Length: 63
Image (cartoon, rainbow, N blue to C red; front, side):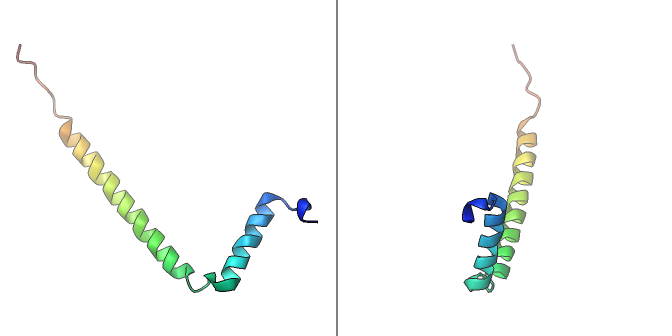
C-alpha cells in the first residue's frame, strides 16, 4: 500500500507528522531565522556587487 504513494504525497505526510509531533512550537522560530538569513544574504550580495563595481574602474595603459 505504501508503494502506491507518490514522493509528493510522502513528503506532505512527513511535513504533517513533523508539525503534529513537536515541530509546531519550533516553526515560528525557524521561519524567523530563515527570514533573517534571507535578508543577510541579500545584504551581502548587494555589498559584493557594489564592491565589484567599485573595483571595475577603468584601467589606463601608461606605455
